[in-house]
Length: 433
Image (cartoon, rainbow, N blue to C red):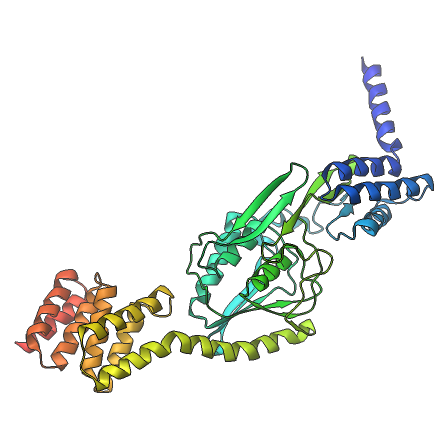
């Protein structure tokens, strides 16, 4: 029995190491014809590989040289940068054995978000390294976009982004569209199936009107191109920088004998606006320039557009409030102003605190009637806040309308009997009495 086991082991081992590079190429040919997105290209590539096999082109090549050579020959016909043959990874252990365990943990790998900040003039900046495919990566998008809520223009840096999950690409894109739009369709030849990528719900505040600038370079690839192309085709972003890498095909990895693997593009992206994609040609920037200069150009443009955006949101309200200073306040005017404030609140341009601060600014300017209208709007939009009623009461006190001041101070006390707002309202009631 021991002899049989030894003989079987030796036979298996000999068979494994006896496999030639040509045998691996033939496995690649089978997978290519079964899975590659373009069957005609797969057949043409296989015919090319057959000629090379006959010439002994792949024989006696070391793994890394073999992988480099085969990848090059696969791309000669397809021109597909996603199509790649990988050598076995022999050294999977960390050189620093002390840290080898933690190196397996995602928290110690390079982060998806290199950084994000709100710069001068309320211009937001996001630097993304890749598009991760897990729930935690969607949460990171939410964190970055939370910081962008106050931005009047946003710059998104894709210059060093090499791609990733189409789902995460679609999620970030969805932050910039309010309506349900079809952003992309992914067609797979292997199962003759089309997956539609629609604008989806997000956990943060959407920014459908904010100006967006996307920075690109020759290294921008795959999912980063998807995001740039989608935003550009829908007119939601200005792309600045260099023509991108030109890879539009989702890829799947396949294991091969002797530890080799191959990544085969099994699907293709179809943009509903252009009816095509960026495969082989890259995303063409709206403003073509060296990638190293694109950030300064984006800042220059964002500074102009952010002011236009801010004015478009706030000027109508400013004019309406100016009218209140000069004319009699009517119910119709109050309703119109309420709607304008409501739009700004829904757009996350204003919140309860912002409206309250605006009201006190008018009190300081001795424009108490306008301030009272602003505070009244705040109680309509945020009726469950004791502070809005306390501020409204104060404005009526400034107008010498003690009856209404007492009424609204009492309302604030009822809503917040033990809190700071309630305590302040109690003190004001005593002073009135």
